[in-house]
Amino acid sequence: MPESVPTKKSTLRKLPWLRWTAYLLVLFSFIVYMRHIPLHVISVSLEPSKTMEFDRKPPDPTQCAFGHTTLVRIPVVQGLADGEDPVEHQRKIDNLEIWDVGQSICGTQEGPTKLVCTTCRFAYDDLFLYRWERTLNTVNRFKEPYFVLSELVANVPVIAPGNKQWGASFSQKANRGQLLEESCLYWTDEVYEKVLAQFQSYLLAHGIKPVTQQESYMGRIYFRAYAQVGFRYLNLEIMRESNGQVLVDFKLLSPAEAKNDFLLKKALNL
Image (cartoon, rainbow, N blue to C red; front, side, top):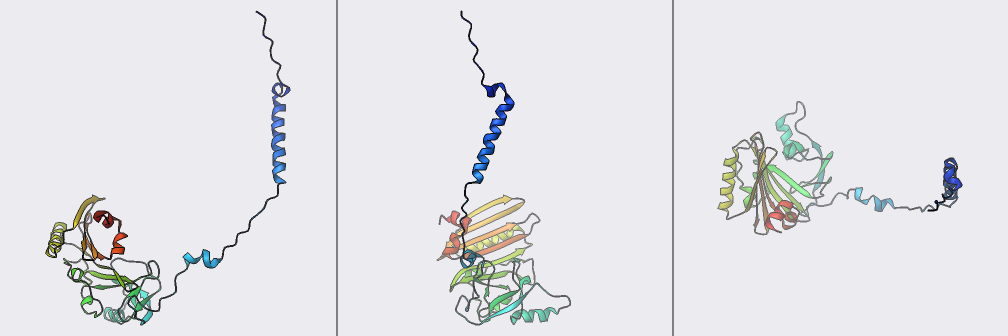
């Protein structure tokens, strides 16, 4: 058989250094070409009034959620100052000379001052939700002529509250003349099973048969109850901490607020 004739290698394959030199020349030519292409920069100007609108707080309202115009800004304090007389401190709170965030067992963030209606004592949340709310304890709520809770929330069993002086925290939240939420919140050292049994009896006495759930998570036990009560919705959570303390959170929500509550919405198929 005839011998195969070897193919001739190209000059670039015979001389590797020449091949790499050619590659580099091509790359260099491409870079030079790209640098000579004119670059058009599009200038975009955004008006601060539109771009920063979401960062700006709305101006203070001129009336509260119920139309009262008796609004004042009062300084926010955190509990008693060193050496302050507790009686004098309480007098300032009652007269709306100060706003004591130490009253709330929730411990929310506040600014340096609080906008408050002196007629109904609703305070404006100008940091987050921009709505009106008020909170009183077990004792003071009976002295407040404008603080009218629904019967179901007003008579919530307050069982051996951990804070003996404050008792339970009764709250209302409103916006544009509409009551969004009423609640009763407190900690107790009572046995979890006893608290649970008393609230189940309380709901049964009011003809409420809720959808209930119970789960354990990270050493805590959660009992939740959901039900429609008239035109509003019940959201009850009883939580036992790993140390045995029990938190009771009893809420009545408007339909709009209920639809924003994921667990309640899912439980009741809203």
